[in-house]
Amino acid sequence: MIYLFIAALLLALLLGARLLVRQNRLLEQLRGAIQFQQPLLKSEGSADHLPEWPGLTEDVNRLITENATLRQQRSDQLTQLEATLGNLREAVLIVDEANYIHLANRALREIFPASRDLVNLRLELIVRSAAFLDYVRATRTGQPLPRQEFEITDGASSTWIEASGAPIPSPDGKTQWALFVIHDMTQQRILERMRRDFVANASHELRTPLSVIKGYVETLVDGHATMSDDERAKFLATIQRHSDRLNAIIADLLTLSRLESVTPGVNFEAIDLRAFLLALVDDTAQRPNAKRHALASRLDPDLGEISGNAEKLTQLFGNLLDNAVKYCPAGANIVVEARPLAATGEIEVAVRDTGPGIPAADLPHIFERFYRVEKGRSRESGGTGLGLSIVKHIAQLHGGRVWAESEVGQGTAIFVRLPLASAGKAAKPDSR
Image (cartoon, rainbow, N blue to C red; front, side, top):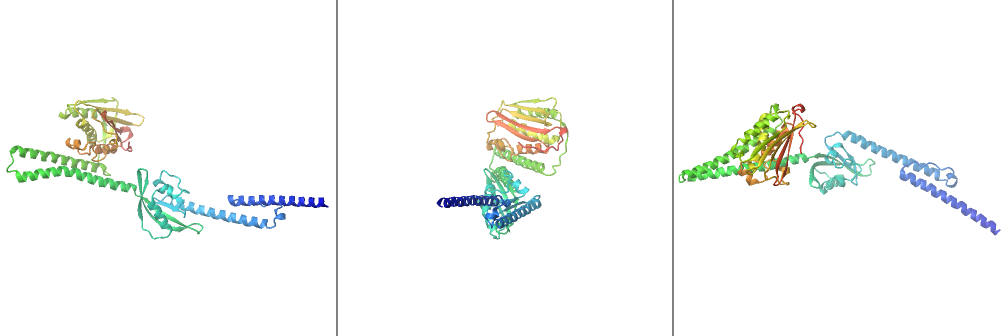
């Protein structure tokens, strides 16, 4: 009897264990269905042991299906919204309650090109500005905020944006999101800074000769009766020298203004660049201040023609030769080289000298207005600080580009590339 009882007990335990294993397996299926949002398939025979299982399966499947439908609707809404806003010039940003980005149109990706795939990233990883993040949080709470401007820094560079925002409900209506319209103000701020710097530099450059002229004129007015003829002549010579400098600055400013205008009014014609450069080097060599240097030219015999304006090109290469003559010590070598570049359809001209050279820190700035490597020496030599800026603009006007290479104590080389006449004068300028 005891053995029969033990056998029955073991059988009951075995059946219970099998039922428990089957229940655990079914629960694992249920957990996986919920986790991966996949409808749960009914297990055959489960109803015999778990009468509530079919109803539970139907409820879970319905919830999964409804959730998938809501997710798809949300995705479709965002896709439709992105398609609608994608071609707007204004940047559009939508973030959720945790600052995850759910929509970023093309204009926004252009503002932050380093992070092309912005969707599903946290805003903090893209916009490193505590002020803007505070603005986002305040907007999401519904506070009425005016349009504001923010500086976004990324290392040494800065991006300026102007943003306005509004709270919007999330697609499920349970949380509050925020939508922002953003304008890229970086170029405008750069232009404003350049304008301020230009006005400040121009004012300083004009004030210097004006102050000298005013001081000498006042001295002449007050003391001309007691001055000797030699003193008066010295004062007048100084006034004349600074008047000439003032006139040169104004003339260069007007030249830059015309070059930067939308329609500079320059006529182009075919120019034999080899003959043009030979004549220019010969004219420069005849000047008294150039006789202390050795001027030479190394020009390819098959340079070809360019489409250009002879007057502007004379100013371009004349400025480069004048700089070499002014700033090189006696006995320096100045060479004008030119060669065709068949691969790019350009002609490369280089003006090389064996002068003192330009420090590496100054080299990227020498084509900026009023930039001088040695301030005092440039003014003493009569320079306006605008010559190389004019060179750059004339090269760009001809569809070309200009750059410099130099080492201190080893001399300087200024390179100019201009398109051949066959390449057309409308070639887009490049920068280097």
